[in-house]
Image (cartoon, rainbow, N blue to C red; front, side, top):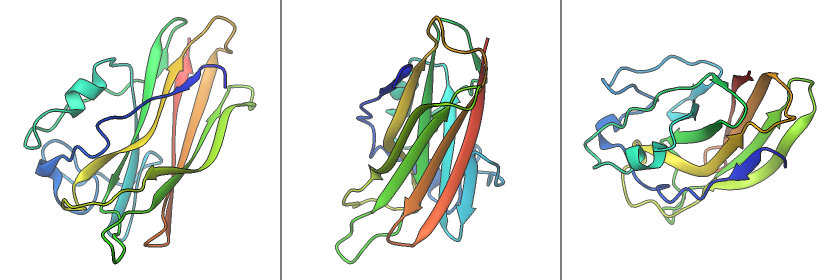
Amino acid sequence: MKSIRALALLAMLMPLTALAQPGVRDAQGNLLPDTLATQTVGDFSASILITADPNWQQKWETPPDVAPQFEPATEVKEGGDLYILSFVVNPKLDDKGMTNVRCDVRLTRPDGSLSGDEHDLPCFVTPLEMDPRLVYLTSIGVKFTAEAGDPKGTWKVAITVRDNNRNVTLPLQSSFEMR
């Protein structure tokens, strides 16, 4: 998959305790409305964030009572990097305390062809001993490097998040411009 490299997301289980409430919330605790990139069904939520910040992981790994600030990115130039991150809130636990959230990830070039298309990836399958209503970074992340020869225009990102324990699917979408 040209221009896509899977990230090793070591911070997968680092919660954001300030947001221990159902739904995706901003740093001030305000519930974010549903958008193409942020969806909620019942008490389960998921979101996509695209950032150009190479220090996103260090920001995520702050103490649990500190809400990290990520600067969203909407464009990239040749040679630049973008990091596509996904988050879940309140995955349902099975009788053994396990989450079972799986994801499909698709990156579409401006001409409609696929740069990447992965299905049924285990994006948050783990025993969870902390409050599931916290915000969790999933293990699905994409580093996009804008390479010479990549088509300029709007690139589309689609991540379908499925909480199999809850039988809920959230289709998320975002995009960025390659200039």
